[in-house]
Structure formats: C-alpha cells, structure tokens
Image (cartoon, rainbow, N blue to C red; front, side):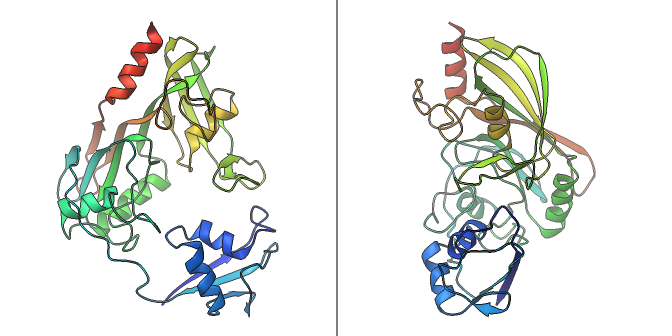
Length: 304
C-alpha cells in the first residue's frame, strides 16, 4: 500500500478535499478518490472526513492507496521520431496531440505506450507503472524534444540535472503582438491559479521560482517569432510568462485569444534544442528537433 502525505498551504485552502486530491494525484479519477474517501482511506489530521470537507491551512492530509489500482499499460506499435538513443537514454521528437503518459480515462495512444513497444522492459521505474522512463514532460499540444531514461541510475542523474537547471532547453514559439526589445528575462514565480484550477498563474506569494529567457528571432505580421530558454521548468511556464507580458502564444486558448483565427491546434510552442550531460559518460549531448510543418506554414503566412 502506498501512502501519500500532504500539508495544505494557502494555495489550496478552502478547496474540497476530493478536488484537491484529484488535482494532486492526477493519475486517479475524482470518482475513484471519492470512493477511497468513503472507504476511509483518507484522513485529515488523523481523522476520517467526507468528500465535501473544505481544506484548512496546515491541514495534514494522508491518502492510503491500495495496491493494484493502476491499470496495465499496454505497449502499442506507434511510430517514434527518435533524435538520439543508446542503452541509457532516448530522446524523441513528440508530435502534436500526443499525451506523454497515461492518466485516468486516457490509457492508450500516449508516448509511454509507444515507448513500451520500442524499449520493451528497458525503461526506468522510478516514476511508477504509469510513467516508466518519464523524467520530465511537455504539454499535449507542445511538440519537440523529450528525454526518456532506460534505467533507474540514468533517471536519477537526469532528474538531478533538471533540478539544478543544468539541462539546456530552448523552445521556438510564436507570440501575439510585436515585442519591442531584442531580449527579455521574465523572473516571476508560478503557482496554481487561485480560481481556475486547470490554469497556472503568476503567484508571488505561493508560487515557485520561475525564470524564462526570451530572444526575438523575427518580427512578423502582428506577431513575433521567438526563442525561449528555460532556466526553470514549471508547469505551463512559457505560456504563463508570455501571457503575463500581454503577448500570449498564438493558438493558446487557455492563456490567450480564444478566437484562434489561424485554426491552430493548441499553442505554437516547440521544444527545439535539448542539451544534457550523458548519465553514463558525462559527455555533452545536444539534440535538435526539426520545426514541424504546421509551424513552418504559419511562419510563411505571417511573413506575407
């Protein structure tokens, strides 16, 4: 049995406990969590609560997860665009509309399903059955480079590089409006949006440190082609930071314009360069994921 323990901060204060747990333990459905609460597998400050319990500041939440609730994740013969591979790691160019790992209600067609077919049993197990090999992730509609670890030793080393911000991650993006300066650095903490739980937001009080470096590559028609280098890697970091500047990414209906005049499928964001020290040899490895065709087509449109 796995036991998860949480202490509630101001970000989550006042939220129903079933909503909180379904957001925090995103591999479990809310209905399953409600069943676990009903079965008394959830306590707050050592006492059993109901699903509608509203969390209070500094509450101690404990969730006991019975064994074998994670479904078997099936290997699927889905083509992979491999940028680099050896016995320790594999770097793939993730396409648009592909979820990185399975989650409740979405167990097929993910990058993990494809990796299990390609790598067989050679994937790290540190992040559990649902996320074999996965050490970091990008959004469903973000394309580009993603590193996956084939064993636990490599996973720990790459995870440490991510933690200390030594991995080079450069994105290509198209934002709305014309940026006036050639370079920007956005240093603004990011946390969960206080009202819209699917969104992140600039949160000076409870957010985590977040730094994005932006370089203008080309001025376009009512838009700007940019490179974004991540110094940190918070959820939706580039999308939130650019939106906070008043220049959200084209196609980003969550943080920007919902009209979507170019009929885009999600934000124009591509993980272009990924550089890291090889976990076995220490050699610096850098991969470049080619700009996707939809992105190139949009650039051409915006240049005319």
